[in-house]
Length: 77
Image (cartoon, rainbow, N blue to C red; front, side, top):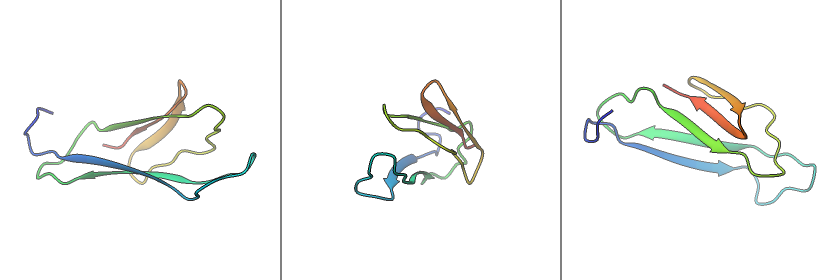
């Protein structure tokens, strides 16, 4: 979508813990917000998976997520 077309995306990433023990688990969330006046389409979120981290089940409240090439990849709209 061309710049200035009414889409204004922001992204925030949060986690559930300050620290996690070896072998422990935690949850993290990525939230994409459109503060613009136009519906954003073809939005893809790609988040690299750090070394030593195993992602168990990427999910999305809109669209689909998968793991590929060491990244969580979500197509959200």
